[in-house]
Image 1 (cartoon, rainbow, N blue to C red):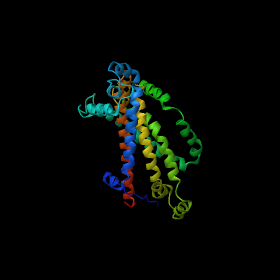
Image 2: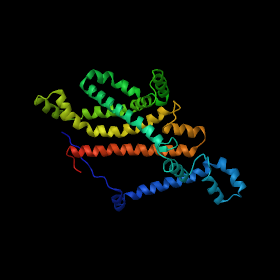
Image 3: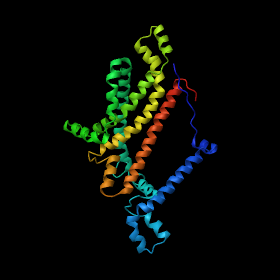
Image 4: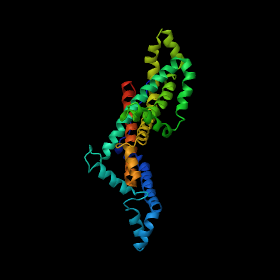
Length: 302
């Protein structure tokens, strides 16, 4: 049996004390500085008449470029202001709250992730036990991911809508379609990772196929499973957002992106993108946290 080894994760205080936080801080500061500088030429088409009317100069250029109500590229503090106004100053159950829209997208993401994980694990178990499936099913699984999701998402929405299925399920199915693939590939690799000598030993003990799966293949596949889940959960979020775009949804991160695009509210678009990035990072962290807890339960070193 393969037991995963758990490495302790440094806290922020430890990271600061050890100096590992410094490179991350420097990169963040560089990104913010580049963002501020990029906002000046990106907004020039809108700011040039205003700057000339104000008399020109560096101060007017910076002040006007970073304070437009509808800029081409909002400055970081404008995005933070939009986040503050739509999160802290609005009740979370109101449609104007960004948290409300995050929850709508998150609910379909989690359902799609769950369905995709179950489908991926089921397919992997079937593939390793039935050789015909390995040759007949794997090419179709791989080919399914070569079709752009933006091309098939509208068809899925329309077909399911004609069947009376609307709301959460169509978006979840799009998430499932995207995230089952890495789970399947990772689990096939993980379930076939035990050494042939270990499999021979199990056969020597007259272990059944189910016992080999439960006591040898499944524990050996867990590191591969969690690595795949980290990829799958991020893709599931992308699928949920894409699923909201062709429906003209009234709620969700995709709806915020559409509304921001329709009305030229770039600050709203960027705030939604930042919220999606934070959600994705949080979901990946959660999978990593569960992985460490599972590894500890299996006897891994803290």
